[in-house]
Image (cartoon, rainbow, N blue to C red; front, side, top):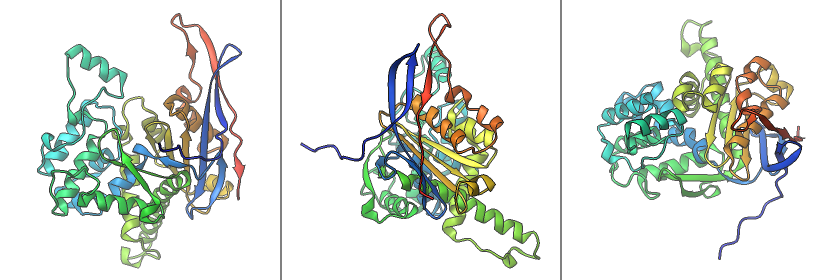
Length: 374
C-alpha cells in the first residue's frame, strides 16, 4: 500500500470559533516569492508538493497559446480568459464556450469533460427551477477544454483522446507547465483532475513562481510599450520581450481584463481582480489551492521583492471558505493594495457566522506568522 508523502507539520492558519469554543482549525502552507523566484516569506512548508488543480490553468493555457491556436481560430482575449477559468456556468460562460468550439471547428460532443452542479448557487437555483440538466459545455472547465481542442487541431493532432496524458497536446502541456515553473519535466507529478484532464503537482513555491512570472511579464511588456511611446517606432524600444514573456503577459491581461469570465458573479477571483484593477491576477484551485501574481510597485519593493510578487496558498483540508479567508488575510498582512480594495473581499475575509435566525454565533481568527527569508 502506498504511504502518504511526509512533509513538515502544517501550522494552524485559521480557527473557527462558535462562541468562545474552538469548532474547527485549518492548517495551511504559504509561499511568497519575487520575480527571480527568491523565497521571501513562508508559513508552514513552502516546498510542499501541491496539486495546483485549476490554479495551474494559466500554464495550461500557455501551452495552447504557443501552438498558435488563438490566431488560427480567431480567439480573442475574452476567450483566453475563459481558457483560464473555473467559471460559474452562467449563460455568458456557456455561450462563449460554444462560440469557441465553433471557431475551432469542434462540437460539444468532442468535449471530454462532464456536466456537474454549477459553482454558483444562483445558477443552480435557476437550473432546478427550469429542470435543466447540465452537459459538458456547462462544466466550469469547459473553456479550458475548448482551448485544448483548438490546440490539438492547431498542431494537426486528433481531437479524439485530446484529454489523455499520452496525446501530443498533453505532452506539450506537460513540458510547458514544467518550463513555466522552472522545473525539469520529471519535477512535476501528474494526476487526473475532476474535469478529466491531467493536472500537475509541484512544490508550492513554484506555483507562486508561476504567478510572479505572469505579473512580471506584464510589467516587462508595459515597460516596452512605455519606451516605444518615446521612440519613433516600437523597434527602437530600449527593452525587448521574448515570445514566452509576451504570451504570459497576454494571459495576465486576459484574466485581469475579463475577471467576470474567470469566475463569475460574486466569486472571489472575480471580486479580487476587479477590486485591484489590473494590479494583480488571482486564481483558485480546487481542494484548497490559491495563487496570486502582483505587479511590481513600491509595496512589493517594501516586501523585499525584485520586481513582481507571487503568492501561493494551500489549505490542508481543502476547505475553500478557509482558503479565501486566509488569502484575504495574507493581502492584509502584506499590506498589498489599499484598505478600500481589500474591503471588497470582506465577505470572504471575515464572513458573518449566523444561524438560521440571523443570530451571530461565531467568528474566524487567524494565526499566520510569516517567516521572512529576505
